[in-house]
Image: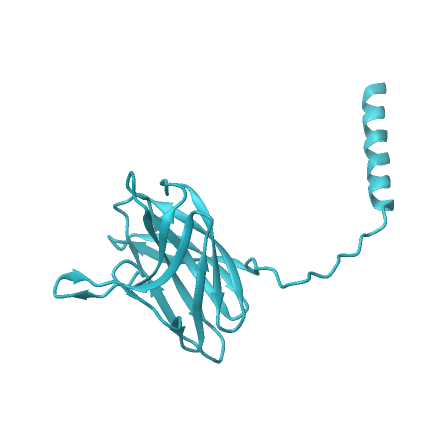
Length: 189
């Protein structure tokens, strides 16, 4: 009984001390920090077999990033790719203009059209445009973020941060999930 009373009294004292602490004012940041999502809600996406799966939606102002993912890297591979859907819920065009991540020495925006049965990678100059009220799907065989000179292998089930820069000044940080090498995801029809 004494031990229980002492524990309750100690807990009440700690709560009172915590409530009495003065609030600390936050110092203004010298430069704007990358944004973390303001909301996260699931949406339906599908894998290569059109099997429904939930994918996270991260919102950064008028920009939504849906289901960021990457394929696991093969042993000794120095390149990788990141894929996701960009939605622009705003009333003017935005462009994805930069990407960077600690898992690669550099990242470029690419378009990977298949011409005469051969993939022809092209660096996207000026960024990937997303019209107002529209979306663009970065996926294998289309637009993607190419990761060059991987600093760590991309292992299935792991995640890594990807910082995206947009033409409107938005800087968004998303967590990319690494999937097994054979997995591809497309928008469910």
